Image (cartoon, rainbow, N blue to C red; front, side):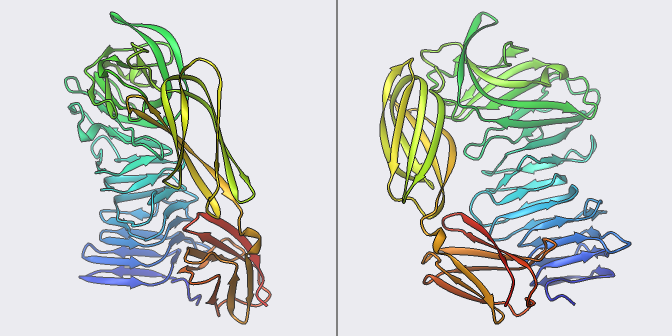
Length: 497
C-alpha cells in the first residue's frame, strides 16, 4: 500500500466519533458515508478518484475537514446526499480543483494563510451555506454558484471577506428582497477591493425564479461622454464594469441594483454618480449612499432584460467628481539587483503625488503634475527588492487627500536564483542556496502529476535536508519549491541517485 494514500471499498463512518488522517487521502472508486455525528479530518489533500470500473462516492452528513486541497478526478460532483459541511482549515493556500465541478452543501473557510485563502481550479456549487467570515476566495476565472434551485437559493455569510477573479452566480426565488438584503448579494471585485452588487426587488418579485451571475473587470481609463439621464447629463464614464447575466428562466419582477464602487476615484459629491451602461442609461437614478471613499451607487426600476447588462459608473460633474486619473501603463523591469518602475498618464486632475508599494510596504513617493491633458512619464528605482517575485502597487493621491489604487504588477528579481542547488541521493533531498530565515513549501509529484509528498519548513541557514526514503532510485520526479516569504517558485526535475 502506498503510504501516502488510503484505498477504501465501502466505508460507513457513524456514531459519535472523530477520525484523523495525517496524510493525503485518495478515494479510488469507493463509497464513503460520513454520519451526522462524525468529524473526519484529513491533514493533507483529498483525492476523489476512480478505480478501473467504479467512481468514488462521498455521502457527507457530518463534518469533513481538509488542511490541503480537494481534487475531483471523477465525472460526478464529489458529495452526494449531502447535508454536511466541508471545512477548509489549512495554513497555506488551499485549492478546489479537478476535471469536473464540485458540489458542496455547506462550505466553511477557516484557513489561516495569507490572502487569498482559497483558489478554485474548477467550478463549485454550494447548495446551502457559504461562510467566509473574514476569508478571501480567488475564483481564478471559474464559477461559484450559491443555491440549487428556486426553492433552495442558499445563504452567504461573507463578513469582512471577499470573492474575486471569476463568476459568482446565485438563485433567486419568488419573494421580494429589500435593498441591500443578503438574498440579493452578489460578491465581486478584484484582488485589491471588494466591490459587490446588491440586486433587490422590494415591491414586485419575479414570476418565475432563476439565477443572476456577476463578474467584475478592473479598467484604468475614463472617457468623456454626453449621455442624457433624466434632467442631468453624464459627462464622464469610468470603464471598470460589472457584468450581470440573467439565467435559468428568471422572469418578471422589478429590480434595483446597488454598485459598491470603492476606489472609483475623486468623488466630491455622491449625488453626481450614476449607474450606466456603455453609452446609455436604463431605469432611473436611485438614491446613492456610502461616502466619498466607499460610494454606493443605485439604479432602480429595471426589468429582467435591462438587468442583463454591463454596468459602469459615470459622473454628471467632471470638476467636482472627476473620477480617476487616466493611467495608460504601469510596468517594472529587473535590472541587476534593482527594479525600475515606469508609468504614464494621459490626463491628470488635482494630482498631488504617487506612492509606490512593494509587497504591501511603502517604498517611495513621486510628485504629480497637478492638472494636465498631455502625456506624462514617471519612473522610480527600487534598490532593495526581495529575491523572487515582488508585487508593486501604485497609489495616486489628490491635493484634498482622496486617493486611488491601481492594480498591482509582479516583477521577478533573480538575486540568488542561480545559486540554488538541489540534489537527491541516499534517501534524502539536499537543498543549498536558500535564503536564510525564509519560509518554504516543498512538494514532490510523480510522473502522473500526483502529489506524493509535501513539507513546509523555515531555514536557519542556506542549507536544508529532508529525508525521503519512499523515493525509488532511477525514477523520475518533479520537485516544486515555493519560497513563501518572497513568492519565488521553481520546478526541478529529479532522479534519485
